[in-house]
Amino acid sequence: MTTALRVAPRTAVVLALASVAALATFTWPFFVPAQPESMARTTEAPLVFIAVLPILLAVVLAELSSGGIDSKALAMLGVLAAVNAALRPLGAGTAGIETVFFLLVLAGRVFGPGFGFLLGATSLFASALLTAGVGPWLPFQMLAAAWIGLGAGLLPARLRGRAEIAVLAGYGAIAAYGYGLLMNLWFWPFGVGADTQLSYVAGAPVLDNLHRFAVFTAVTSTFGWDTGRAITTVLAIVLVGPAVLAALRRAARRAAFDAPVVFATTPEPAPIVRRPRSSGT
Image 1 (tube, one colour):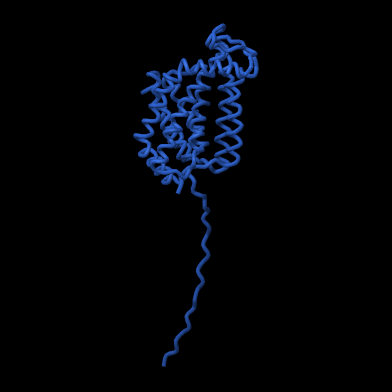
Image 2 (cartoon, one colour):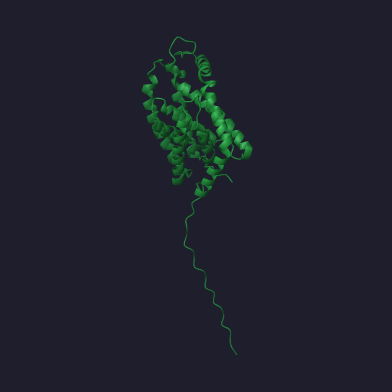
């Protein structure tokens, strides 16, 4: 029996449109020439943040209307976001060590892609408020983390035991590198400077700029920060993943997140059976 809140068609449409819009915020300089100015993303970030909030609201409304999430699931979302916000300061900023992604992967696995998308965004937002990490990078961090939770909820549902932990650990490693790639992409066209072999070239062919970006990512973060994040995530999933998965699934069963609503009806009165009188002699 699975306790995951699987994505409904309406939520799937909202998540797909949100992902396309989010991808555009990261990749538009490849298709539209941009001026590599250091303050470009600073002025763009508030607009992205304003766009992120309706996206999250649309996901919540789609989940509520389709029955994929309810008040109890929203309460669980708040609790897990608070836990992630408290965990993040334990590792962020130290050799790429991140203590936030393993719980995001595990919760997305148990509660489904819509829940994982919301948890990724709210966790990064809450941790930024807690650690004074609010800046032009925040909306892009929220979108990248939201994709991690979304992807975890889309993994095959039938896996259990060691196979499940192995798949989650592998996904955690890929997600850690993917997060680093996306966070490089948000500033690379504007923060590297011009006239270097790794610089963004406005109006250049897409493949040329992709090659420059791939080399930049490999040199600056893939073998450093991203690898530290991947190792931390994999170790956390392997070591505490089984216990956390069991706890989350137990909470989901007790809360009956996916139980159908049954309305009580007034029972009909039982028919009165009259026994025949026995004649006495």
